[in-house]
Every structure is written in C-alpha cells, then in structure tokens.
Length: 292
Image 1 (tube, rainbow, N blue to C red):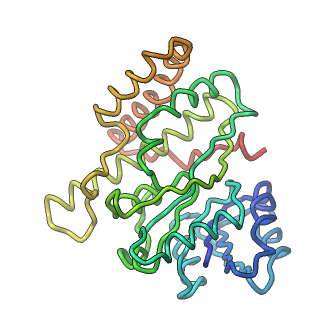
Image 2 (image 1 turned 135 degrees about the vertical axis):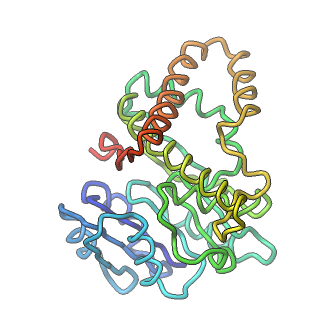
Image 3 (image 1 turned 30 degrees about the horizontal axis):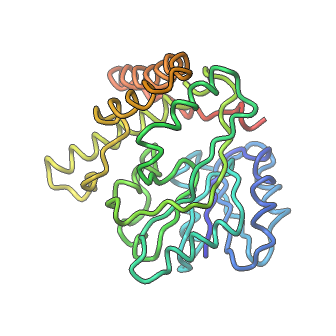
C-alpha cells in the first residue's frame, strides 16, 4: 500500500504519525512537503528509509503536495492520503488495504473518526458532544484526515483539482454504496478553543461552497467537473437539521451544548458566505492549537 502525506510546517506533529508507520516495510510512505519554513523536511528525512521517501516543493499548496506525492508513489495501490496531524496505526492502514482489495468491495474507504477533546475548552467540548449526533457522523463520510482509494477508485479522476476541500471532492465522486467506513479508528485532536474551531470550520465551509459551485457549473454546462453523486447531500441539508434536533430533544442534558453547537456550526457558514460575496479567500485557517 502507498501512503501520501502532504505536509506544511508539521515538525511538531509529524513524528507522532511516523512512529506508527516508518517501521512497516509493507507501506510505501511519501512525505510531500510544501513551502515548509520549519524543520518538517529534516524530521521527515531523519525517518526516511527504504519504504519512506521525501519529496519537496516550494509552492505553498496542499493540492500541489498531493499531486507530487501521487507521482512519487508510483503505481502501488491501494493508496491512502493522510493529513500530518492525525494519529493512525499501521494496522488500521492494513485494514483499509484489505477492504479495498476485496473483490466487489468499496472503491474508497476511511477509518472511523474519533475526535480527542481532552485538551479542549468546555465550549469546544460542548460543540463536539452535539456534533457526534449529526447525520454527517453516520453517513460513511470520507476524509477529515484520512481517505484511501483502490486503483479503480483513483482512476475516477486525474490530478487533484485546485479545491480547498480535497476530501469532500473525493467523497462526491462516489455513491454511498461505493464507500466504506471501517470499525477501526483514527484520531484527530480537536481545537483547544471554540474560537480556534470557528477559524478552522470557516475554511471547511468555504471549501464546501466552492465544491457546490463547481457542481452547479458541471450540471449547467456538461463540463467534466464532477457533480455530486446521488445520495451525497451535504451535512447542511434540512433533513439533517431535523434529525439532529430530534436526537438532542430527547437528551435534556445536551440542550445547553446545542446552543454552543449552533454558534460553532452557524458562524463559520456565515463567515464563509460573507467572504464569498466579497470575493475573498478565508485563508488557510488551519488549527494551530491542536498542534502544540
């Protein structure tokens, strides 16, 4: 299995990920560093060996890094794409490989996401307590840090396009029946504060709006830009709101947390919409508090 890890200034978290992967000779790991100004490249090269390769570009772009990593990974499939700040074991990657090489199996797969809120503020924890009940969590979503493709799945598109949300772009290429969420977990550390979450979520919301515009163009013009496949409605759909309200309604202890969730969910949507109307990019806005 090949593994591509785009990395921009990830010296603080990359060792945490590589300690699980670098000793496994069955994984061809490519660290694709882009415009790093810290010791990310040095950290990656210190871990490099027969099964770990480092490629570097001076262009500050995750998409450029993904495409460079694809080239360096060659023709070894399945292929997993990992954010540098996640925590995942080699055994979980093996489970992805087994699922994606099973005849008649899925074309894209991801482990089950677990959000670690142990270092987060009470408000951030309240947001994620409600978020855990959302339809998005139970819809076999792809991404949020890891997704993997079979050779057939990867052939569904060429180079990664210039989009903010590469994981959502990939998810929308596949119907739910072509996707699989494993029982095995990976871990993402939550932002330390609700403010940090809002900054990060604003970029996610902007990425989702960008993909929606691409889909509208594809449907209107018949262009090759893929439109969402049937059954891939976004998490902001009205049925999703109703379902979440119903789940929270029978849990009175979550009612205060739901108010926090409305802020953590609604404010990023508003800020992304305002940025779009003004023709501005929300910036990278990645969460630095979980990388400390």
